[in-house]
Length: 137
Image (cartoon, rainbow, N blue to C red; front, side, top):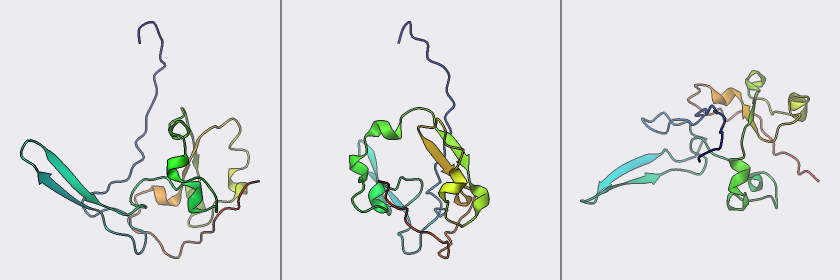
């Protein structure tokens, strides 16, 4: 784009590895499997994985009756510029409540919440307390 100054950006890869049997699984979820197929002139990879495998987004409909499904979320919402990272890793397995975010959202259009689960954890704790958020009016 000639004549247009584009400021430098830093991109952080926050994805979790799915290979080598290291994927963190929710109890009852499928272990990811990958199978390469050679079709002569090209190769394809067959993938088997659950919808909660690895780094993903939970659509509002996952928690809120009548909420948007993934296909209803405009891509621009997910790729809309800078994001503020809120480190909530000290909260442990507790539910992140509005009070934990108070005073930290001013001016933020997009947030990423770093939780205890963001670290090198290899197992999901089925005893983790969780409750669905209440629908905003």
